[in-house]
Amino acid sequence: MPRESVTDIKDKKILVVGMGKSGKAAVQAMVKLGADVSVQDNKKKDELDPQLIAFLEGKSVTCYLGCEPEDMSAFDMLILSPGVSPDLDFIKEAQASGAEIIGELEIAYRIGHGKYVAITGTNGKTTTTTLVGEIYKAAGRKTYVVGNIGVAVISKALAAEDDSWLVTETSSFQLETTKDFQPEISAILNLTPDHMDRHKTMENYGKAKAAVFRNQTPEQYCVINHDDEECMKLAKDCRAKVVPFSRKTTLDFGVYVDGDTIIIKDEEGKITEICRPVELKIPGAHNLENALAACAIAFFGGIPAEVIAKVMREFNGVEHRLELCGTIDDIRFVNDSKGTNPDASIKAIEAMKENIILIAGGYDKDASFKEFVDAFDGRVKMLLLMGKTATKIKDAAEKAGFTDSIILKDMEACVREAYRIAQPGDVVLLSPACASWDMYTSFEQRGNHFKACVQALER
Image (tube, rainbow, N blue to C red; front, side, top):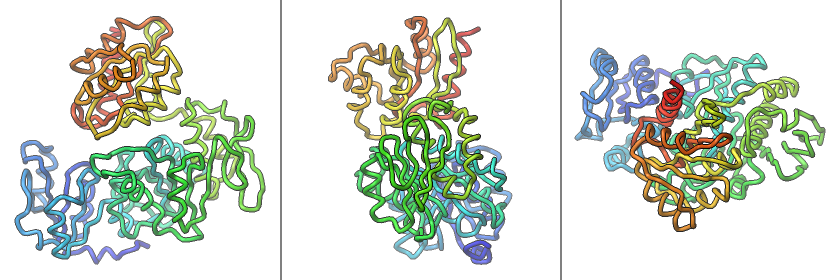
């Protein structure tokens, strides 16, 4: 059964803010349920998809495009897209007038069906969510892989049944607009500085992430990275049963690596062997952590160990995350466009080990690049930079004594220059350490452009 009657939505005056994927899906769902729907987006009518405009006009949806509604007291509810800050003046005005402010994840949870696995963290969310989804599917469960991974939750929640599982990648932006959201299993993979332009402080960022377990009960589970001090601090306020995972420490309870084997130790102390880390096809210590988290989510979600082990051995990773997309003249080209913050790119550099020609730079999220540059540590032989942060990263590199860097105008120039200077055995790694929004609409578009540029070299 849905957690809120869909009849509660009928005739409710709802403003959907932001016409990205989740916003579009929210509009479609609210129209279907009979709400009085309006939309707002900073883009003007001629900047949006004509098919979207035709749908909105065909359904008599009131549109505020390139502007804001004058009377915010007219709305009962605002549904915010993840990229929209709740701190905007017109949203605060609506809240002060009595409107409820929530996000697409929250409304999907309320009016949809199914049980939730919610996975968050600074890095590794997409890989872990995809892996968990594959394990749940292999176990024969009705499974939808949704959320920040690119599929709007509400688009599947209404189609889900009570015994369905929605394996959900949840960002801090999505979580900060939840109220009742309560997953059966939550997970926080790690916590390092990101989105400081939005959250301002690590305390605010951590608070947003902690919303993933805020409503859980002692009968439910929260999977936490035992090796991450910031994660463990958050776990102190968790009422759910905390399941730690560690690649460094032997645990009395949880998931860990013992010698050359991934081990699960349950509440009774019973040990179950899953597989060996060397059997994983996804490279890097960070991916071992992702695999451990996926093991915990699946095992304590009731999935048999043999199913978990089989999928773990077969899983090839996800697109745009350490994706080998070509080898030319014994030079490997690796697409890590999903490296949208310094910590993610540090992990990519560590996974590739050495002889790296690194392509980086992009939208500025007010991050520091000191630790990113420190991670070069003999691994990176040349740094090719583009985008808004190019000069900022170059300055950080030179301050640290790394002077082999060039600023170029775009992706094509970076790929061509990387190929020109690369030697057999080198790795050309796109791992920007930044979001894509200065030059691309998404990290997927950026990664696909990188792959197209590599393919052009082969012609």
